[in-house]
Length: 353
Image 1 (cartoon, rainbow, N blue to C red):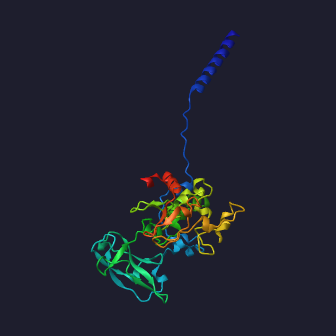
Image 2: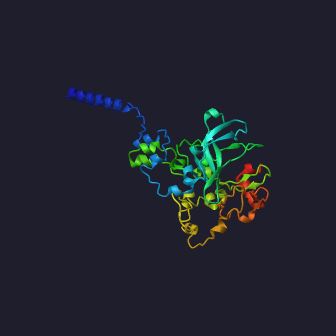
Image 3: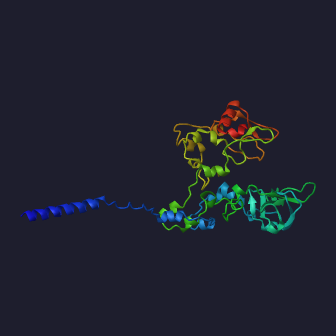
């Protein structure tokens, strides 16, 4: 009996030792694995530009071709010319030198803002740039257009080709954007689309589509005022701006969800503007119920500027029209009110230097 007890106790001790040893053995912590979904796999691919025609395979442009963005660059065939234009000799206006080359105007790439005929200069010509304004459209009394010189070589009647510095915004494909399109198309705002085209599911398509924000809009539509290099005056950005939006409560308080709250870039309203409503005040009342704003007062128009543009002020009275004056010499809209100038300099200290 004693022998049996001893055997049972020994067995219990042995089992206990084995259990303790097993519990004390630490299992290695498994390394967390990062799972890549099919959507992120497609999104992480370095996208390239595919061009508007590829986008239109799925996305009809409705009336996008009527928008100012799309109309900013048109083919020469869109204009009725007064005669057939052929080869001309142009000089390198960007480098201001005597190099010249021959350009066939009938093969120009297109017309920017109904004004400048733009062409690509052969590399063999040795010009400073690749794309130039090689002609200027002038409307005749009968409605036809003639192509005149964009500029003349100083002291001569020779045509001087102007640097197409407008390309970055008006023709992203010529401004280094990579898109094969000459005017502003889908990829100008949404970015290169090859990954989106390759996507096969809705999840993948959403993961590969860049949704434009105010930052993308403000790349071309500048808001901040600038300093006149000659006079040192602080001037409103009129040429292409959403003038002074930087200082509006819409921007500083985050009260609206970017430019696209009011603007619809994919089509125009009844007046041909990129607004979500035909009447601008109808947009205001979606947030400001019961208000009846005079849009021309809160978004006053520039009376004059060097380029003849009319750009509505987007500060929404943060910079009132009374704070500005038009310089009769330069035609710049100069901001002169001390309180407003102080506000601008605090927000943009580099302007005070």
